[in-house]
Image 1: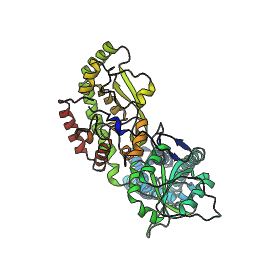
Image 2 (image 1 turned 135 degrees about the vertical axis):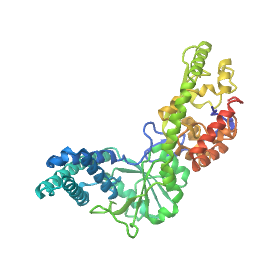
Image 3 (image 1 turned 60 degrees about the vertical axis):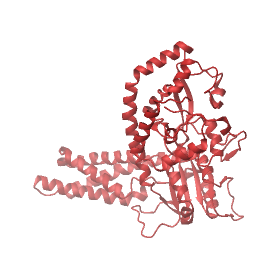
Image 4 (image 1 turned 45 degrees about the horizontal axis):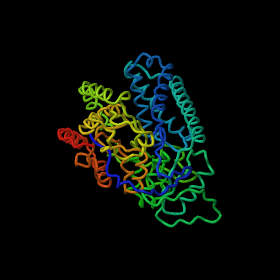
Length: 485
């Protein structure tokens, strides 16, 4: 498929330290293992389930509704549509049932008024009694409020116990005041790990400003996002949003929820009794760019279909390669290595073993083994033909990788390259791949990391489903002329 290494001259001899709140790593970047940075956990599935359950429970009072499955389905769909239209499923910083009660009550009343009308039309008789209708509305509202109160309570307790890493972006002293507010009010469940500002911001002397690092470039911001698993970004004021448009879009691509703090735009409306706020700051969630949301589903569908077929067709080849490795070099057919994937999440990459490293340190930090004398004849053939990378089809099926994307690298080198090459860390906003735009342009083996980085980011910025197909076809063609690794 592809190769991962380049000349050792590309690796800097000295790496500067990078500091972020709560952690310090001499390598400058350590991708936290586990879940990727993402916005606050989506409340949609449990709230939708609660709404559907409330319809079923309330229907107990309406005999006609109990026997009409189609009616129950229609009422459930109507409830979900009305609540979605009123933004009652939207992620909120600190949700409260009491604030949502008027909006919920109005929509529940509409649902059961429609239900009464439908029952009357289908039965050809009078509407259900008013007392019965009010009882259904009351039961529905009680169930919905009880479930939401429970879910919101759980979320508040979790937020206090495990505050989310948060970046603050702005161009005034408001960033310092906001850091202080988050530190003094843990009920919001946010812990500031960095501030990005383009203007001189001097806090008032009376303020106690928490020791939060100031990030001076998009590269530092991306490193902080990966290292701290940042899930929320607070943009202070319209000037902050205007100064950092590209940065905000980049952070959304990394799965961060971006909140705009400041005056709401003219004409803004909320179904809530009180607008969303964070310690008095008007607050609204910025929607991601539509183009970014279409990438994962389309890529994943292509990956599952193509990788599944390739794995089935390549099964005999996999068995032969495994037997050859076993006979030539003993037990341990597969080589497992930590690599950095999308959003800095580490995963275990699989390969056929072509060399047995002296220890784990060598495997993690030795850049190239292409000309290592320990590589035997079988290993050299597997590397030249790229057959050693066939087990990564399993990584694709697992979702660790894609067929096409930036090649994944080891954490040790990701840390170094992120400090040395502009926008290297930005490669991790897309799922990593077996092959990529850089590889089909010959950037394999001893080639420039800077050039690869530029190709990778161009691929991400201009991604399309057809581009993935073209890269796969060009990769298949290049395999007929193996160049070694």
